[in-house]
Length: 363
Ligand SMILES: Nc1nc2c(ncn2[C@@H]2O[C@H](COP(=O)(O)OP(=O)(O)OP(=O)(O)O)[C@@H](O)[C@H]2O)c(=O)[nH]1
Ligand SMILES: [Mg+2]
Image (cartoon, rainbow, N blue to C red; front, side, top):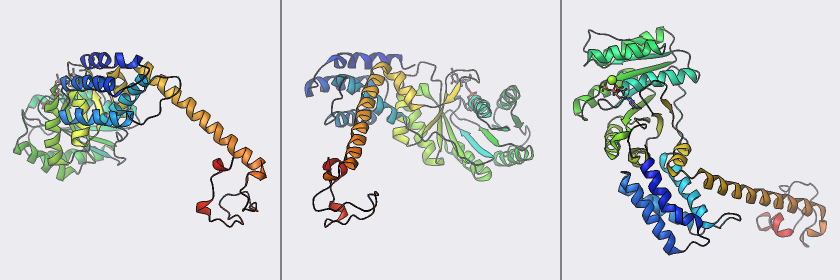
């Protein structure tokens, strides 16, 4: 996925990368193409518009770094804004133990598969006893599917093939998991073809009974903006704590990944990238941004240039400080040298501290 977006973005930015001077005209043209690329990847129009505005605002007034050209610097700005759009930080799960996770979503979005995948991944990350509870009573095959996957990944498992009372099944599953000393309890729920009041009510009743620490929507990334609408509705009803975006290995154009955090405010925490239980990972916005843009070389060039500047600045500051200390004559005339080297001790000075010049200005 994302190939088409990557192609379009690199075409839009190719010309800009080489320019020695950014003019309003050439930037305008390139950003117009970036906007078109985003829209054709099914990114929400509002998200695309705000994205371009942010890039423009950052580009204007930014000093051009030595060793890179302005076009390359724009690529870096776009990379950073893409990362921010995909969602920075906040992918951590609640620290509660046992950690109770309610998996919700539409039919076929990947809830059951992702339940097993999440159990497997978190086991590798240190949870010792993940446990899966089957709360989809509508398809007997759904219970079997989860049982097989749980066995395969060596997760604890609870199901009740007789009861029709979903909250009661959840509560019994919770008790069974606690009795087994589980430190991670995953509740797999039923999906519907579309969101309806019954589905939401059932999940709400289950939520009230098991009191999950995380409510995670499993959304099909291939649905594009439709996935964003689904997420918004689920979030309004259930106050989601995170998202799992599945099927990113398919022909998804990227619209869901790029719009969902910005529109719903809910962070993507994990991504599904294939049918196998190993095809699953923690979501890293910066990695995906760099993959979408496909210009890691330019981004790291600009980062290095910025580092050199930072380094030089730090050296200059250090030099300034030490020379200030060495040269008593650098102290302002009306100030007697402070008795203590600490700058916080008040020098015997007629000036107030707030108006005292900085070390740099004394040099
Ligand atoms: N390619 C790909 N397929 C996936 C991914 N995640 C899930 N699937 C497939 O999507 C199909 C549906 O997955 P399930 O886990 O059964 O979906 P569900 O949400 O539990 O579906 P219901 O229980 O019917 O609501 C299965 O064939 C999975 O193998 C993914 O990340 N990539
Ligand atoms: Mg299922």
